[in-house]
Structure formats: C-alpha cells, structure tokens
Image (tube, rainbow, N blue to C red; front, side, top):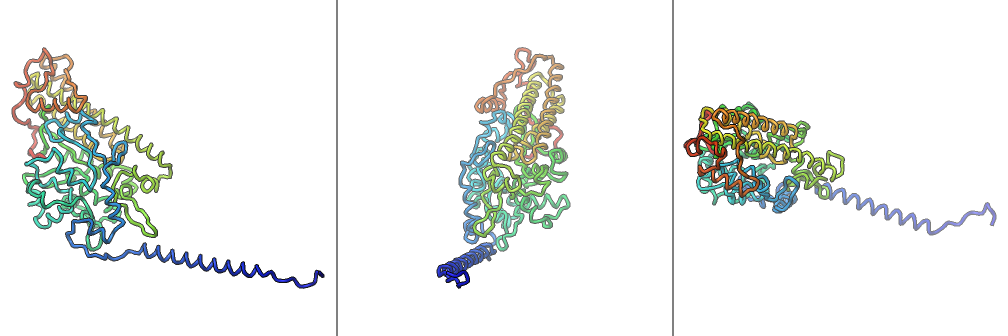
Length: 492
C-alpha cells in the first residue's frame, strides 16, 4: 500500500472512548452523591424529639444524639484496666495497706475502691461501706442529673441539709447528659452551684469563659477538692486563696476545719477528695489550653459526622484518638512514656505514705511515754500538713500524670514534713526518758492494718515503747479529740 494512502479507522477506539466516558460520568456521579451524603451527615440537625428542661434520663437525649449516646453506653464495661487506672474497681487498701493507717478512725479505712465510671455512680455510692444512716445528702451532689433537678425544686441549702437516705427514691439516674448540657441548645453549662460560687468569691464570672475552658469546667464541677461547710453541710470549694495545695491548706487553717480525728495520733485531719482539676491546672496540658475533654472525650468521625466520644475513660485506652492527635509517636511508645512518669510518681507516693504513717505511730509512742497535748501540738500540725500533701496527690486520678513535676514536689514536701515530725517526736521521747527505737507493729497487709486500726479505735493500741514505757496508752491518750486551735469540727 502506498504510504500516501489514507489509514482506515479502528472501530474499537470509538468504543473505548465511549466506555471511558461512561465510567467517568458514573464516577463523578458517585463522588457527588458521596459528598452530598457526607454533607448531610455533617449538618447539625435540630432535635427531632423535644427535651424537657429537667430530663434526667439520658436515653431520651439519645433519640436525638444516637452516636453520643451509643458511646456513652460503652461505659457499662467496668473491666477496662490500665497499669494505674481504668474502670476496674481495684481495692486501694489491698494494694496499699499503709493507707488504712493513714485513714485510721475514718470511713476510708473500711473501704476505698477505684470508681467504675459515670454509669456506676449511683451503684457505687450506695454500695460503699463509707455511707451510713448519718451520711448527709451532700454526698449525692456529683452522682446524678437528678441532683440539679432536686436543687431547682428544693434549693441548694435544703438539699444539702437533707439526709442521704431520704433522697434514695428520688435519685435514680447515673451521671448523664443533663449534668453538662442545656436541653434546648446542647450548650455546655454549669449545673452545680459550688463551682459558680467558687468563681464568684474569686471575682470571676464563669459565664464569660470560652467554650474550650468549659470543656474542662464541666468536669471541674465534681473532679475537685471540696468540703461540707457548717451544720448545713453546704458543699464548698476551698479556692478562695487559690487552688495549690498550700493555698487550700491556708484556707482550711484560717477556717479551722477538720474532717476527722486520727485514731492513732489524735490529730485533727484533712481528707482530700479528688483534686483532679486543681492538679490539671498546674500541668503542661492546661498551659497549652488542652481541655479535659480533648483527652478523655476526644472527637470521632463516622462518615462525614464529627462528634464527641462520650465514652469517658483513660486516654491510654484510646491512644489513637487521644494522645496521637498531638504526639506523633507510636502507641506503644506513648504508653511506655506515660507509665514511666506514673511509676515515678507512685514511687514517691509510697515513700510519702510510709513516712506519714510512721509519724502517726511516733506521736502515739509519745503519748504512751506521757507527752502532753501541748507538747504534741506542733508534731500534730506537721503530720496533718504532711498527710494533706500526700492525699492531694494520691486522691487525684491519673497517678500524677496531669502535673508530674508538681506532684513530685508535693510528695517531697510530705516526706520532709513527716521526717521533721519524727525527729521532733524523738526529742519528745528522749525528754520523757525513752531513747530506744519505737517498736512499730506490722501493717504490710490490709487485714493486719485494719486490725491495728480497730485496736487503736478501741483504745487498745499495741505497746510501742516496750519495757521502758513510763505510761500506758490508757493513761496518756486524751479522752476527747485534741484541738490544734481549730474553730470547727465538721466531718464530711
């Protein structure tokens, strides 16, 4: 064929172009449909079911917010466990028997377990041995959305002044949606008066804080240190002077408050609750404006919908969505780093709690040697301050991770104060003619520690001086609680 002859068209080329065009059109159509579907999913839909102003049943809220409610229900799993946390109800007294001695004469020496999470709040508080017929209704404050409903009906003062047992039939729903959200707008809100009042006393308007701050403050309604003020057991935050351990200690000393009298040393004591927010404010995450919810309730996506995961839990159980958003390391490296920090805090905590426990026993030995209350006034003040510092770290969740440097500083102070207390006790013993070492009883198991606790409560504590004792405990121990010059005796 001549090179100049026209080439014949290839029929399959046309078909190929046609098929490619069809495929392209279908692909673009599918992509457009997917985009529209995702946009529809991401669009904020108005509530389909109206929510009443005081709706305490979270399942009703779940009709409008199924993703949030489904993740909230995952907190029913109380088997989750990290090295130092999780929802598993570990027995703190079993793990650390020394704690029994630190709370000698107080209900925490009977039972002290890790909380199982929001869905178990009512079951756990009604089932603990720390609640009895004398427990005030104030102990309900953070356990249920029925609480703000009842406060709206009764007024906070009347609610706090009631008895715990009298409100059992009214409080039936565990911590849920109403605790943190407005029903009509879903806006984050403060539903408990104590936090508002604490802000107001510091000259702050809590309504002016940012949305990001609110993502921590809704947690701070409950995850804080507090006490029951006055005969009406009015729940109050000791923040008037600040939120550091020294600030709160100064507040309590000025007010003249004690939670109970220690059965071993006869010291008026302070019990820290769970100062999670206070510790958090001293850490790097607060400095970088990372909220509690960023780590414990991270954002999730399903399709095109972005929502907050309401399975409140340890970030170590959800590293990919929590820690790894900012920290670009592997999950195992993140977990290892966190646990290394917590291990060091635990080591410091164990050293502090033993030092404080021995200080209590040294004071008891001084009492057996015949020391007077006036002689023991200073050492009792020391052990009170030392144990408050230990408890400030021990009672907050996270094993110190929220502010590890601050926690280690406080634990070191607890050890230092305890050792100063013990040295002073040694001088008091010498003054009363006793120079041999104190004979400390064994308390290396929960059973031994609780038996020792009961013996001291009964006024039959062991002989800590041996043959050189110049006075029996029955003769030396005061029959009434010892005063450190405190103005009020207000047990929680």
